[in-house]
Length: 363
Image 1 (cartoon, rainbow, N blue to C red):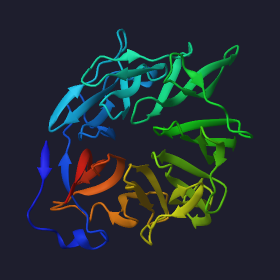
Image 2: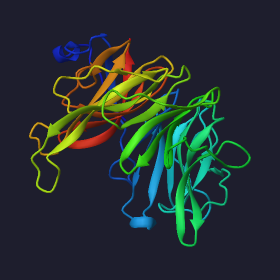
Image 3: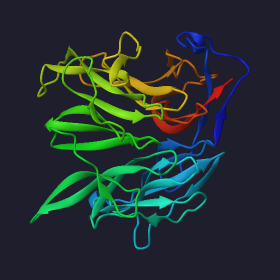
């Protein structure tokens, strides 16, 4: 563990931190078996799920490892017997972990109980492939996708709920041919990205009280819902109807710009981003309403993006790099997850090398 902290503030730390919030950065060193790791989620105790790919195997036989980092110590999560790969996705509030065990091409859903490193398989509807995308804080709602046989040598991906005694398919939003759930809250409301046509996703909310709602967009015809909290606030990105010119051979001369948004009762609100942002997205929200995300800049119009992490606290935008205390050259390029204490699991970059980091708010 490497913790960066100083009693003095960088001048830049306060420039665009309208809320005055600053952060201490802690680097999560990878285990010897992995050259680099990426965070997936952060628990209420500050534990972080991190993982990466080993040098062994490739394609469907690639081997991924996942670990729990807490206070400088790493604990490896084991796969099911006869499996070599794991992928941890989400914490529940009691410290249980939900994810997958098995090959890249044939994972099965599993749960690691709090404090345990050996998983238990979840119901799977006899599907050979299942991916968990999120679990609610209570652990009572678990969503993902199943690869279900639709005919001889034909398979289709279907959204599913893995929380009961038997996995159940989630209803398909009316008028859409497929959808992928991305997040679920403690009330069983989930958000999903549904498609009528290839590459054009529409953000969808399902609430057990009133069914499906197609979320409004700022402009254009596509968007993504990426997280939902227990108050029903949803975050993600929406096309704006604006275009950006690029100069890359083999690519269309323009592409759609998207903007980070939050939805309240299906109504979108643009989140503030820097003026030079070409794209932006909000990826997670906690129960306090704190939001994290990132924006992308393409200064050369060559489709080579620079990524910068953001937070929105009390409606104010925070550039997370500028909010670091004693940054020592670090840049926060991507924010991944946030807990209810405001701690953020993120990716940082120093001298061209990216590492998993934790940002802890300084009161």
